[in-house]
Image 1 (cartoon, rainbow, N blue to C red):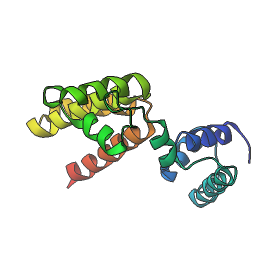
Image 2 (image 1 turned 180 degrees about the vertical axis):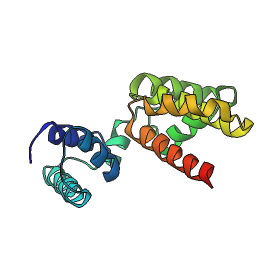
Image 3 (image 1 turned 30 degrees about the vertical axis):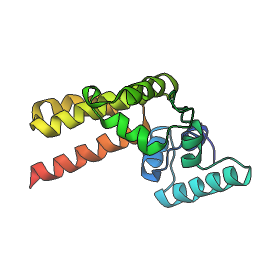
Length: 164
């Protein structure tokens, strides 16, 4: 194996990308000529080597990298971070506002994900289909693999339902 796609794939895996289809699509853009099955085996091998070298799994890295709650000094849990990400600012408590500030400052992409999540909630709440296309463009261009993948899947699903 060789080419730019190898180092790019390893880098994405190291950042916690878990969707093999997304990794496969990205590698194809960079010249990967193999099959999806070969990519799946390659990704499994890279993950296995990373674990053998003592590198924590993506979920463990995420938990270890979350910042400390300024009020309690304990690590902010992923569940609390997700809840704060989705909750509109007027509904946050003072303690949650403090955690929000820390998360925005210390977690790369948290502010981007929060803005997209709040906008998406608004689209769903007010059934505003006109703004969906702009949201999808913003989500696909945000550079956060999980959000990009979600937007791509949402586009495919919306096209399927539009053709029915």
